[in-house]
Amino acid sequence: MAESSEEVAVLVQRVVKDITNAFRRNPHIDEIGLIPCPEARYNRSPIVLVENKLGVESWCVKFLLPYVHNKLLLYRTRKQWLNKDELIDVTCTLLLLNPDFTTAWNVRKELILSGTLSPIKDLHLGKLALTKFPKSPETWIHRRWVLQQLVQETSSPSFITKGNVGTVAAERTQRVIQEEMEVCGEAAGRYPSNYNAWSHRIWVLQHVAKLDVKILLDELTSTKHWASMHVSDHSGFHYRQFLLKSLISQIVIDSSVLEQNPLKSEPTLVLPKDESAGASTEEPRINLLHLLKAEVEFSTDLIDSYPGHETLWCHRRHVFYLRHHLNGRLPPSMTQRSPTDSPGEPLSDLNLIPGGTSPSQAMEVDGLNDCNKQGYSQEIKRLKRTPAADSLGLEMEHRFIDQVLSTCRNVEQARYANAYRKWLVTLSQ
Image (tube, rainbow, N blue to C red; front, top):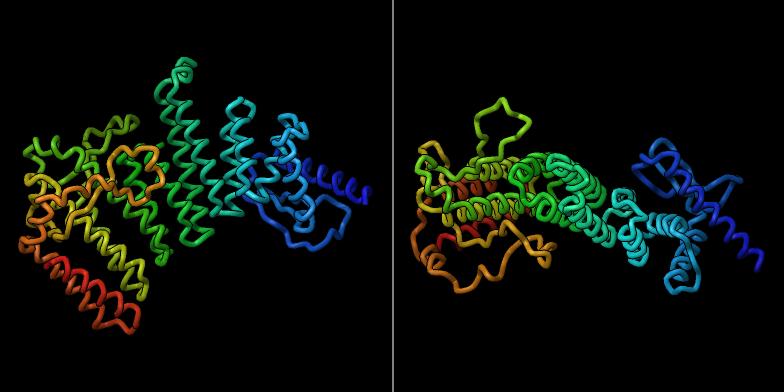
């Protein structure tokens, strides 16, 4: 029995070393996976590296995982000493097989704080773990911690005194944001309704991108195709709702400034000029009313093309809700529209996400603040007892419902359409 335990120890140490060597030979590994293999058929390493894909033969996991797990626990209980390189190798192997082992991530946090481990390498390890376990909550939590370290490092005086100008810090932040968007997109594609991935994406926009308007608009555009290919994914459409609410919140925050300009007859956002595009003197603008109208049209196309999906009807209801709130909360000078504009729809009030979110609200995906609900304001009461100012918008929605009901043969589609009609009726009362 002793000999068997020694053989297992030798085998596992060799496998851990093979994994470490694989990352040294190819630092661009972008995916991991298990190779179904009940038993060792050949006298060779169970670690297979093909191009940028790393595979582990399944027969060795039953030996490998308990060994590295126990070894790390012995280290944490001070019963066995491991040097820094051994800690990096053991935690890397353990997290690739079980990324929800919090102790391993905590050890790597200590290594990062001591300067032994690069935060960028830890982000890469988390990315690999998410290719196999795309919903791993501990991996997403650790990823946010690492990003916070990078943000603090970029904004620290020591980073500036090293000769890094503002453009270098901005480019680094932009690369990090782009990388996170790609990681979240891949994880969302691997696991349906991946709430953890979409929540992390929202967190990045809030705390790394600082709700930058241009990034919000880019995200709204880039996720449109994804949403059209995943019409039952509530989390993906909820993310688009967050983007729209965040854009509207910029209008609410800056409404006092925009109201002072009599030339602006519609709620628009002025995007910051791109320094690299110095030849262009015209300030790009975005009209939020038109943006919400386009989202309603997008919803119409999806509902017609994919009948019977509750997610699409819920999304349409939310966008309709936002359009009214945009008309109701903006100053009068901002809600005047030209005759060519589509009228908005009056609904009840909506709590918007503030531009700056406290750390305690980092994972509050809806972004609704209870403080905004205090008092049941007089404006809300007026909206409820005043006749609909834009009845044409409601009429257009009722026509859409009538068209759906007259042509659909899907029982679920008819049920969702009738439920939407009842919801509209309650709003007009």
